[in-house]
Amino acid sequence: MYSPLIVAEALLNGLMLGAVYALIALGLTLIYGVLHIVNFAHGALLTVAMFGVWLLAEHLGVDPYLSILIMAPAMFGLGYAAQRFVIGPASHGSDNSILLVTLGLSIIIENGLLAGFRSDTRTIDTDYAFQVVELGPLLLSFPRVVGLFVALLSALVLWAILERTDVGRAIRAVAKEKLGAALVGIEVSHVYAVTFALGCACLAVAAALLMPVFYVSPTTGRAFVLVAFTIVVLGGMGSIVGALVGGLLIGVVEAACSLFFGDSLGQIGIFVIFILVLLFRPTGLFGARQ
Amino acid sequence: MSARDLLLPLIAVLVLAGLAFSGLSGTLLNLLIFMMIISLAAQGWNILGGFGGLSSFGHAAFFGTGAYTTLILQTSLGVNAWAGLVAGVLLGAAVGAGIGFLSFRSGLKGSYFALITLAFAEVLRIASNSAPITGGAAGILLPLDYGFLNLQFDDRRWFALIAILFVGAALALTRWLERSRFGAYLIAIRENEQAAQALGVDVFRVKLGAITLSAGCTALAGVLYAQNYLFVDAHVAYGPWISIEALFAAIVGGLGTMFGPLVGAVALLGLGEITKMVSGGVPGVDLLVFGAILILTVAFVPGGLMSLRQRLTGRRRPRGETALRSEEGA
Image (tube, rainbow over all chains, first blue to last red; front, side):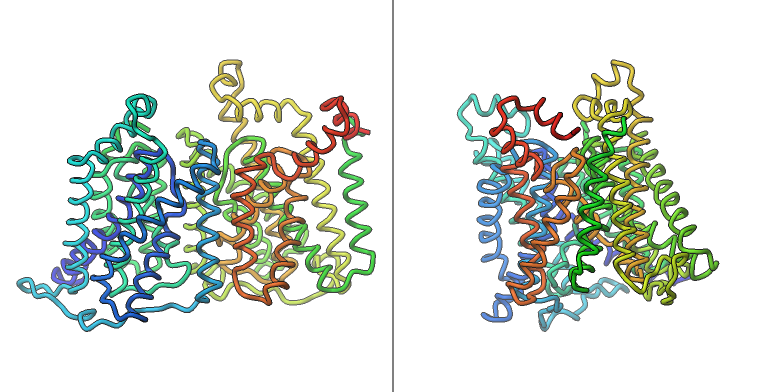
């Protein structure tokens, strides 16, 4: 058996990775909750954001954490355009078509990046990548501590946008009653695009938090797609609280599985949870409706 | 189903076989074989996704099971390739039935079904990448040994012919689906599940039957793939690439049509080769084009290439549907 200290450290590290997962899932669940679409391109869009962060660091020397200020608006714009001009018009509103269009989009993005950057993995060197924060007897990785706080802060900002602004009110109105919202003068396709854009902005933040400790290659996002879907399904499709709790939970489960069964089987733990939740409780922990 | 219904599959087989024996270069023959394999995988996808309206993102689960089964049986038990083929198809169908049983019992459809099939395929991929029976990350190599019983041929035209015959059988199976009561139930479920249920269709059993047939067909593609390349590893067998190509070919060709998957596979792979040539081998360009074509198909030609043909002939012949039917049956 491992000493309790190692287990505690692994679980805490898992919790902090889970916070970044939660941020990715937050975007996904927001998009699902409002547009009722499963955005299969979410992982590929995360890869785009990660490449963005990498390019800024490599060529302009921008610190990954500071690049949030550039990448979040950029991804917001990209997301807005993708929903407004590609996904929305191409899928004619049918659930199956949306799934296929976002799948097509993810393939275009992945292979576009592959053609442009080849399949090399790229990393960013920072001074703080291997720094640790001491918390009593525990040693915690500095980038992961930052990840936890920034992810929670972003969730708070997202919540504030949804609850306290006019745009947020419009988004919630469309999520509840699309036709009614349209009748009182809310432009539904604009709200859809803004929602999608907010989800992509979350990805930009997640990308900036991941890059100091992770690598990027054209298929990096793939690994995160199913994890994010697992979190969203676990937390309940469309539930923001669910995405947060689900993300933290999955991070801990992955850390525990990796510790006890090795890295590759750690992933299996996630998929098994995913399958079990889908089979036995498709509404998730916090979801009200299917 | 009458003998007349088999005429079109027969013609297709004759044309393809003629093509295989028309003195194609080695590269083109290999491409033809690959097209047939993908077409089989897509024909399997079409049974569930096209006729049943259940889009799977994880047909790799069946493809890979077929591929692994035959190679494992041949290399470790010394079973002959044909028995391996039958076992691969049966085991692939069984995996399909298992996944179907779990998913349909829980009433999963739409995006949920797509995601759970993807998750099953990924679990199999990761497991086969570390399990000893599948050769771990190194995969399994089948030694070269020509002979009919080994399903390996010095003259690759014979392998092409066998693949073409299987494609023809899958075409006949699809035609049967179009004509049979079972197929009608399946289409009814796609169009309106509740209405079908109200009319007394056993929705669960019909769906289960569809995924089993679909999985068996795609597993056969996996068996042929393994037999053709004499190699399989976790990525080839259970990787997302085959789930995606099967889905692409079926959708681009035309969902729920007999010839759709075949036409789609030939068109896509042909186009892929051309793109690779034009771009000078930049990686990913062919798939990039596929992705764009998928979106364009969904946006502008939801019926796929086959509907394009029907639109054209429909315009030439004012009698429309009936004219088409008699033309197809003749």
